[in-house]
Image 1 (cartoon, protein in one colour):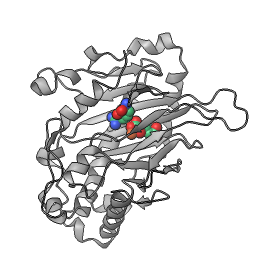
Image 2 (cartoon, helix red, strand yellow):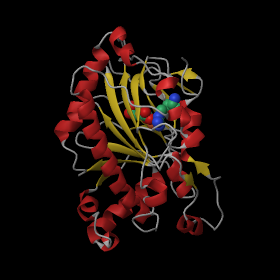
Image 3 (cartoon, helix red, strand yellow):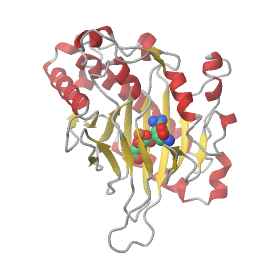
Length: 328
Ligand SMILES: N=C(N)NCCCC[C@H](N)C(=O)O
Ligand SMILES: O=C(O)CCC(=O)C(=O)O
Ligand SMILES: [Fe+2]
């Protein structure tokens, strides 16, 4: 259970990355320190900042810039890549089309998923089959985003090695059958600012309170706007302001199950009360699409020996969310 945290911890993960390919990484003092910090952050908040992550700052900025350019286009242009169920829920959705707990969210987005080819996962994969729909303008959009997605996927796998150690397992708990062929979700999100503000403006909810679905989320948010909020145990909303050079990182529902509740997927929401338009690029690192997730033995032992969650197939969880997230 999350505690009454008042702020979100910052972790320099460079020692973890430097030793990630060493099978004895768990014995390195630098790695041990990162693992201890990850464990504390995952128990107390389910949210943390990572710095020292090695993804070039120029690329991090460029993906936000190019996304601002896309959202600046008129609707007709954006609708050329409209999201449809036939496209496996990939593409552009208008403001208000995504709903969270029955209420339309004040955001627009391009949703992308790792490609699922026809028949790849049988009935389980059917609703999500399709290829991503990228804007044709600017011409390097797809290439840039794919480069960024690859780096985020790689980084997430490495952070998951640290989290596997933090749970008391081997570094490779989240590889092989579990997440060796990790699925990913990628959302390019835009939140309009508050219109002509006098006094203390309050915008509608940009994204309602929710948890993320998979293992680990990396959030790359615009500088200078504080909009993401995380709920602590008392129900207070704690801001996660942008910290240049870092990602906000948080735990998803599948990691809650794997850890048998040692770690939880923390509720969070977005409210953009700034006059400026805000962009957020969210990369979601998941298990294999067809993994049946159940508590790791080591976590079961550490939590009294009883399994606290039903087994969940990641793809089923995703489909149940995606097919109810939209009014179209
Ligand atoms: N893939 C992820 N995690 N997307 C997060 C979107 C959260 C809002 C969505 N309407 C919901 O209610 O889940
Ligand atoms: O906009 C943000 O900062 C976070 C968005 C988010 O929580 C999500 O898309 O799951
Ligand atoms: Fe989220």
